[in-house]
Length: 244
Image 1 (spheres, rainbow, N blue to C red):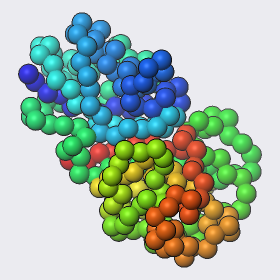
Image 2 (image 1 turned 30 degrees about the vertical axis):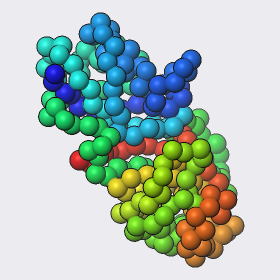
Image 3 (image 1 turned 60 degrees about the vertical axis):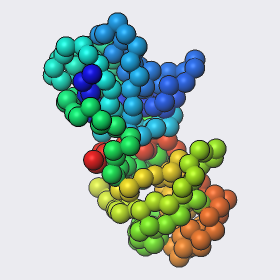
Image 4 (image 1 turned 135 degrees about the vertical axis):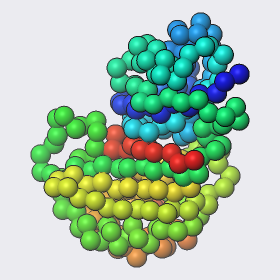
């Protein structure tokens, strides 16, 4: 049976995350419902990552199998005709039968967006974390650099979780500023539950002077979520890309 790979873009504001849940709208459920309308058969899809409630994506990767005689171009057009307006298939392709969107992933890129300005936003209220007070970005950058490399990130892992291996290799953590907009770009071989949001919340505490940059070393060594800081709001987080 042919296997297809999709790249999805979605606004996570109205969804209880990626993974299908009873009695709650999710991105996976919306996609599976759209596939069922095309095929008249329920087909389970596999996502590269389980984004949480309110988290967005520009590059979520999905795989599924179907014997419906449609080309990748036809799949993209047919699914977009049935998906809600806040979910879109940006690309579709045929892949090898053993392709698995989650197991084959080599690295993922997430981006966290902060809007640093005095007045609260209207248009970006569900697209970024609004911070209005002082923020020392030099200290944030120094603290971020201490997280690079292969570490036990238990202190930045949300609970409950079924992950038994807390070791991740954080290859990149860049801070980019464009006027009031701040982007934190993360690339790692894997991410723990709410890891990016916990790191961002802790980095913001550093920027606010509540912690010293060097505290990041102690937080990592503690291997205890209570040692780290606030979990940043979901609306600032985006799954940007998955590497295979």
